[in-house]
Every structure is written in structure tokens, then in C-alpha cells.
Image 1 (cartoon, rainbow, N blue to C red):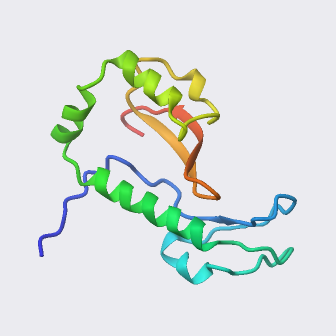
Image 2 (image 1 turned 60 degrees about the vertical axis):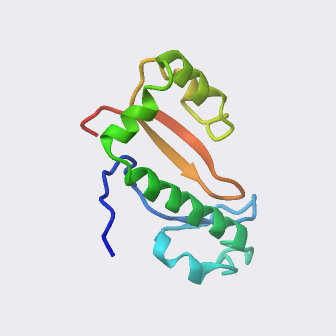
Length: 138
């Protein structure tokens, strides 16, 4: 079987991490994605609440597979998709997507922003929680 090329269109800067489901508990741990499945139903050492539900695990897997798919796309494929929208349409789409809704920094992006850094959570939903403009060198 031929291995798919990784174009690194989406770079994972910091992988993983779990947080307690209890909104009054601040416990977090730096668990890697590859170890998530073993953490399903694991109790928080601080308060005993769940650290990773089956649903949160499923969302993390779907997000990872989506990243893998986008990373398999060549620059030409991405350009073809990117060229379907004007800069204004792309900006409007980003700002109106529920994925980016209420993300810190989303309103600060200019219409000509091409590359962004996004911090994503899979806790209770897949959602961007922080967005910032990135340089091509980042």
C-alpha cells in the first residue's frame, strides 16, 4: 500500500492535553493523542470527575482524521479550493463559521490573512478557541 504524502498544510504545534469535565476544577494534563483511548472514563485525580468522555474522544479522532486529509492535499489542490472564493468571501466565511465563533482574535484578522494559527478544543465540541495571523515562516 502506498503511503500518502504529508504536505503539512496543518501543523500540529502542541498535541493533546486533557482537562477535567468539572467546570469548577482546573485540572489538566499533557496526555498525547495516541494515549487518549486509554483515558476514556479516567477520573480526575483532583475531583474525581471524568477526564475524557467517549464523545470527546470521538471528536478528537474526527479532528485528527480531518487534519490528515487536509495534509494529504497538494499545494495545487489547496490553491484550487482557495481560488474558489475571493479574499472578502474567505474572511466572511471564517468569521461566520460556528467553528470560529467567539474564538479569541477572530475579529482582529484582516481580509488578506492567508495563514492562521488556531488553538482548537474537542471538549464537548470541536471548536477554535484562539485565532491569530501567522507568518509563512511560522
